[in-house]
Image (cartoon, rainbow, N blue to C red; front, side, top):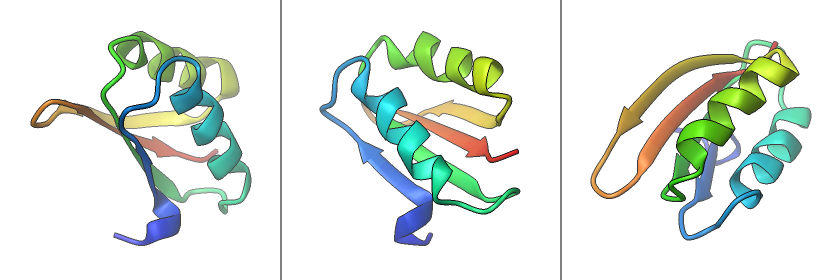
Length: 75
């Protein structure tokens, strides 16, 4: 996984995971998939909501060991 396509937001609280994801997505090409790692309980609601509001595709949302994994395709 390329470093520019992975955002480690572990330990960050709302709204930082979404703000950092927005900033990282701006630098990516259309169709790129950003993987976001987050352990903020609010991210479960915030990241899908961000994708709907911004028009990006939430490709996958999964639970991992103590955190969540989100895959967001830039549109």
